[in-house]
Image (cartoon, rainbow, N blue to C red):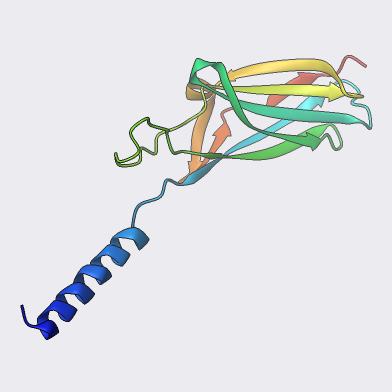
Length: 142
């Protein structure tokens, strides 16, 4: 090949490689939105902790929010990419929690806890968010 063709070919190959790297599909980040209330008198120090649990009982993403006027709302983001032992395979983006654990903490002590089955108790609210099918009610023991 003449040098001009070699340079042009190398430029085209380089551009294709850069395009492939830039356009490589990434898995989205979805959100679990949990709304609820506390039955009974919630103390000023009441908090709700939400923990997403995946298959094989692996806890992962979590969040905590202070109860305000007996109610709470908490969004928890989670990555949908499933891990694989083969790194050269295309990414799989179907990772979802198995269980959502909601814990009421009063003065840093567990007061109530609820376990929700993700597949049964949550629905798609929009393209990247899941919300609980019904309001979560936690009971204050104080």
